[in-house]
Amino acid sequence: MRIVIRYFFRGLRLVLAPVMLIAEKLSTPQAVERSEEEQAKVDAECKNLALYQFRTCPFCIKVRKEIARLGLDIELRDAQLDPEHKKALQEGGGRVKVPCLKISHTDGQDQWLYESDDINAWLHKRFGKPA
Picture 1 (cartoon, one colour):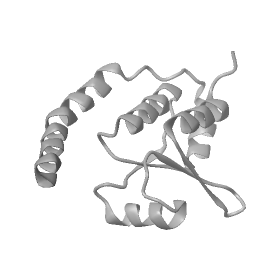
Picture 2 (cartoon, helix red, strand yellow):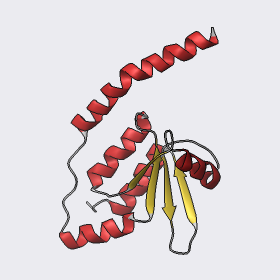
Picture 3 (cartoon, helix red, strand yellow):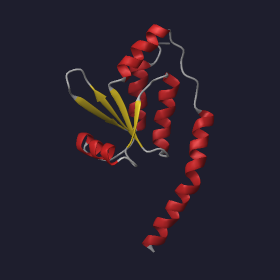
Picture 4 (spheres, helix red, strand yellow):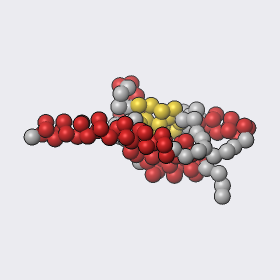
């Protein structure tokens, strides 16, 4: 019975994955407008960020949409298909759970931020335009 359930969910993921990816492409918002100088500064700050994610995870899609909305150039690391990224997430963050934003501070410390709402709030606070 366990194997039937496992294959049912694998089949369901195979059917839903393309739908989720197409929906993401169609509903991704336009990036905020910044001057070239502001965008260059934001891009430089994004070099210290990496998002560990699974391609079809709905919570990862939510974070990628916020990244696109804010016009951020954050490295995406697939922790599902790349064993090196999965190992780095396990060793650095302590668990293989996505989405996870790795924030490398200038003092050499790494901060691992889990939960899509927390990541989006941090990104908005850090890179969002004041109202």
